[in-house]
Image (cartoon, rainbow, N blue to C red):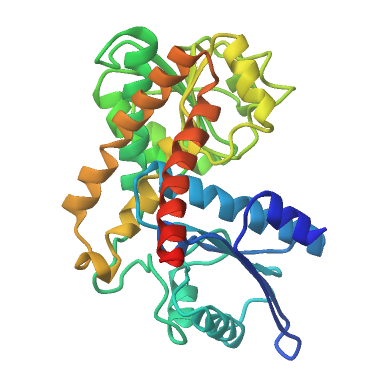
Length: 358
């Protein structure tokens, strides 16, 4: 079953990490190293089963390959998960042991933070391996990725608006934001600053209070965000929000936001196209955080915010290229983004195989 899955989706390596004396159960998935070392965060989550943990790490690592490829980074895709409750089962010795497993891979996998794993945890992991990036507060660190991710999403929204409404400005456009977390909060600065009319929601009242204290935005109940008549719907919270229950309620002309895995199934991308709703593929528009830590890698001479932001700005052209190509070929944008990423991976794979033959 596992071999069938990794063969179908072309995974290179799956590493199961176990230390029963410490309660460590972890999986490291390396989807591809064709473009460079497989890079992706470590997530600690109390999964319901081993199969659920495996499915999550495989899905996430493949997504990182595509995100790096579409963003023109010389990185492959990887991810790791530690199975356990981060509030009750995390310990310094467990994290250090996990760091030893990462180190055994010799740099083919580079880890970073994800759900359940913060900068203090990464420091413990880094005590056992140098293959760690994205530790806020450390020397040469890229810091909090949220502002840079928000800048990239803003650039992508600009491209989406230009394609959909033939305008270079967001002034007067109504944008509905689902979720007011860190990325969305920074995104508000750009949207409101350009004159967009923002309506937003969040299940956390503290996030709502923080946003309305600084910005003149309209707040509605979370369960009503899909019914808002707007120009652009911006999912910035949970994944799978475009699903069979919500897609019929959408009253937007375009979808462009920061959330990961916005489409519950690939069919939802086709359905958006049938409904003539433009879609900016999630992993292309929200790649700013990954691009940011890319410039933290010592191979590139240490972190440079100027270089990182310049690269993130290219998201606007990436989204424009995806949407133009989708329109020209009568294909849904999520398929076009996949093909663009796969073209770059295939080209690198062919070059690698030629080197093996030589």
